[in-house]
Length: 109
Image (cartoon, rainbow, N blue to C red; front, side):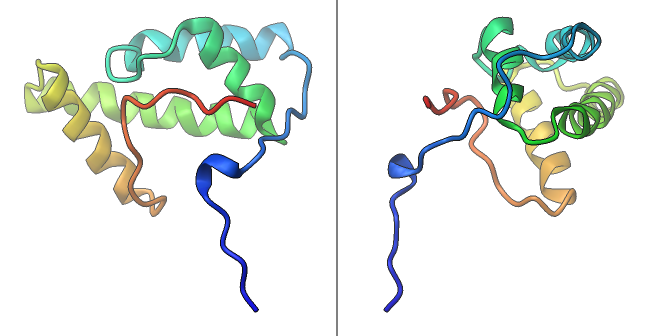
């Protein structure tokens, strides 16, 4: 028999106590690009990568997403928060990762 678990019942595993400084620096470069559409503080964003088994790979993905996002907003003229959310959603969907809710809070551990 298949058991279904509600998303809010999922426990998140913290794999790292902290990130190496070089990864923190990379997150700090990404943050200003995406901070308008994600309501998390820089500290929450940095801490969120501690829940990734391979944070460097995840940061690399976010660097690419942020680069595409910045470019698409510039050439597409996205200026408002809603326009930028739409642009990011389109980019994210094209990665094959499916839909995400932009602007949600980070799940608590």
